[in-house]
Image (cartoon, rainbow, N blue to C red; front, side, top):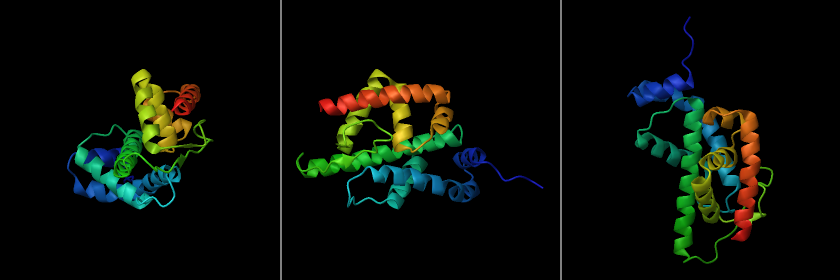
Length: 185
């Protein structure tokens, strides 16, 4: 009896050109991608034109076109979470430019995840995260994976090859920095 291939094996086979691996992979990762997308969408304004399923599809399309290699399952989901954040930021920037900077609805942040003001615009949030990345890339990555990716401390630690205790400490510092940065804006 042969065991079923792991997500990591299927990711590697898919990137090597095995179309059958993709057919086996999608059912194994879709629910997790949908969970990540739903986590992203909860922080978006109500009535957002992009739905979680469309976000998953757009992210997966970008990942497929990127021709990136994935070290393992955690690495794949970390990149997927970042890709979803970029898609939502692109949508936010496009919406903001259409309105010429005015009337942008605030995005409520999950205060359990990010200690920040009660609301923030996705573009302002992305700008703050980019600023944090210039100061401390690891803190930015941890915040993105935990908040946008919906990853647990353990999943974030695995994706970044850190201990869960380091993730906890860095996340608390990143949340405080982000709250301060968004408050200043």
